[in-house]
Length: 254
Image 1 (cartoon, rainbow, N blue to C red):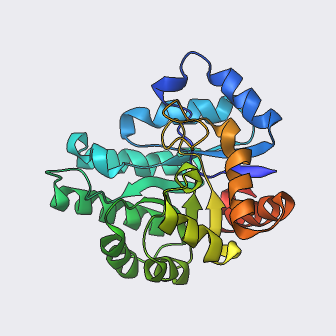
Image 2: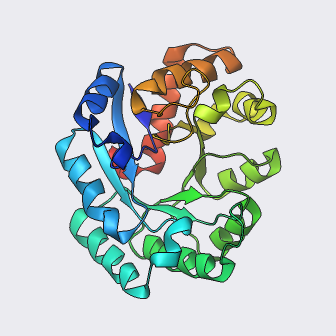
């Protein structure tokens, strides 16, 4: 069995065939999927997907690229949703310094407040860390949480080791399958297998064999096969290790 630790199956891109996508993923051997929220307005859609599909588990949070339309009441709504719906993590949260003209102060406020909620409920976090690895690490050292996953990890080996020290797993997905992603493929090869979890980030971050088409959780086994090839090990070992890693850090999946 494989676990997709980051898949936005609630996204509009799946509105026409969501059930079929979920069925194909299960048939391919994807036994569990984590569906992260990105804003308060989308929490119910995330929860509805997870109620409908066995093995799907919600994470709830306010994404750094959605904080421009958030307000402090959304944080109280998140806290209430945690109490009533028991997500496996707070997420997708974090910082994004890639987009021009980002409001760093606003991103950092919502990130810090959500880390406090994660700490309050002893929940792990799903981290968005685009161009912001060191800044995110600074916050994690200040607000110690129950580990989590550094989603779509693309930092340095030193940064990877710092996340691991703080109890985090590193998410690898479609980006790893592109031959030109040499540094990322080196990390996937050399980091301890115990630190790696698999993800698709569907419908985004398509693997090389999909090109520019919509990504999907059914492609996770082929992504796992790339990891196995890079490391020179069998698919069974990759599946067993990454599944155990996901369950270790996302205890609500067990």
